[in-house]
Length: 390
Ligand code: NAD
Ligand code: MG
Image (cartoon, rainbow, N blue to C red):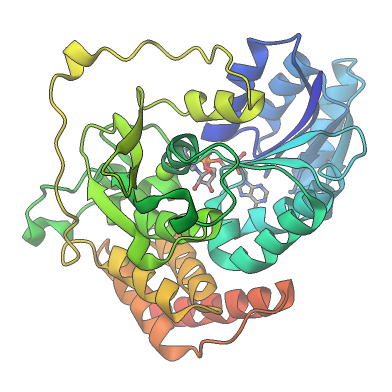
């Protein structure tokens, strides 16, 4: 029996994780569930999964949940505040942590789980983008098992040799082909992109996801963040990673070997597949995902990414090559810009403008510790907020 902490249990990845867990009560037990402020959904999840702990970062929401949990007669201890997220990751009885908080808020608890040597199911790509070397050092130092949940990275993980140790050349790998759907605006006339709304940006053609990652997919910043994520996970240089736009989202990524073999992982676009893979690794379990109907898919298309249409992708490559604090700055500026876009303060095409201005304005410093990352993150947020308010 594996005991799990689910960070971000009320989100898109969190609810998909609990869907898979509910199919295997003999294999998994929930130790802790966490969310930002969603009292009602977290209460329902507590009733169903009976965790020992439930965390809400918002203290007022935590107080409300505490009352409701008592009324419902549940023996769940409700904790409030951000520090409690770390607390429930390092509990001795916890075997694995699903890191599915959105954005920079996921960094500290995910890092705490890595330092404690827990098995980590990593959905929160922002952790690697912001603090790739600090996080990977923690993983290696504690011997924790790191399993990528992002569908592309999960596909690459599956297509690499078992036990891959971070040396692409020694494994006979020529390059990684990272697929991208191209999002809802792949074919939108450029002249119309300026006026697109948050609703249009969040209407992804293939995936149902949280709002922040949906906007990232529309701008292709998501793919940029994923290039950086692949860099850290697989020790791949920017030149080793080719983005391939594949609108059907059936091939989740590919690995090309020196002999010309190209291995891909395919499946319906449903995150329960990589989640089930991570939960049961190295075994396979039922995820609830329907069989892939190749006759219905019929056609698979591939095109090169358009860096003019999607300047965010170019900015991410630029930040990866600049290294140091640049990816953390890119990530923070993007989070502020996306929040402002969702709040209708800026236009869609302002998102790359904010990020480019902040990357230009701030120095690139070396990253030796978590503090270096947090300082860069705070400065970038301040600079992005100023740009938006000007
Ligand atoms: P979501 O917005 O649906 O859910 C986010 C979760 O994080 C919620 O439970 C929310 O309560 C919690 N949360 C938000 N802000 C918080 C804060 N400040 N402190 C603590 N908790 C907070 O997001 P999602 O789509 O599930 O994405 C989660 C992560 O997984 C992201 O990093 C995303 O990039 C990654 N991811 C998502 C998908 C997908 O299909 N949704 C695919 C690949 C990777
Ligand atoms: Mg992805």
